[in-house]
Length: 340
Image 1 (cartoon, rainbow, N blue to C red):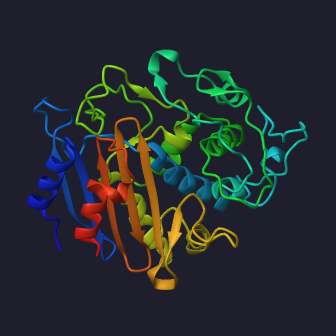
Image 2 (spheres, rainbow, N blue to C red):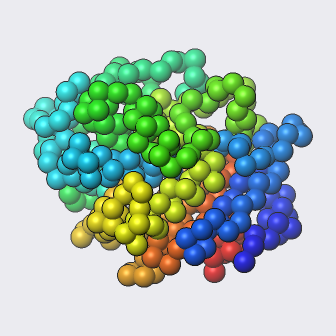
């Protein structure tokens, strides 16, 4: 099948979404890709295959894939306390006792870390790029007070940017390298992802501008998330499709970067929170197993849904934040018209 451009354009107009990019995977291959609208309201500059969108929390999906590759290589371990390998900072509970939280619990958002009210917000880039240790200590405008464990690890689900900040710090401490460089070397280059990164000020690269639900630009302030692993990725749907196809190949035992066992682990649900995989949301069983990741931030919304065992996936990125869940706006309409 192919994407219905006329229908999508009509829905974009209805929801006042200036631009979007869509990738459709079927039989484990990229079958169709469409870029529609403009990078900014009134700009006249069309969205192209190389236009980068802010992935927001879909950054966690890429971070999880990277982490699983490092686990497979023996650099990280899913079921040992992350404090055992942290060097620059230590996670503690409310009475300042070192925590036994594991990487598996962090990936499933079951660490007992509950983001402060409002979570890890976005600020103007002029506030700078603090170190992850400073951010975890609460020494920056992005987060008030140190991050610590307040709940019982391995129990309740709490979607946590702070948990993925800790994962980033762990990767940087173990690999002795900035997170963005590890991602570039371990995933972007091996998977030929030439339009992905964590810097939104790259010469010669077009970045989509964010908009509110009325189609008004959020510029001139550039929303800045100083925690790449949790929300800092700028990418394209076609680059994301390369990661999804890698997962589909790994399921068949043909992955270039991941093994069958690793992807099975990612797709294994928590015993207490059946929708929680390793860095992804899950639904369905066996061959119909669904993997999903959602991105929602200032001026942007996106969604990735994949069925690794049957080789089907839909990836949608938009430069508008509609104020409603993805399934209740443009993205949901495209999903229902394409996947169902």
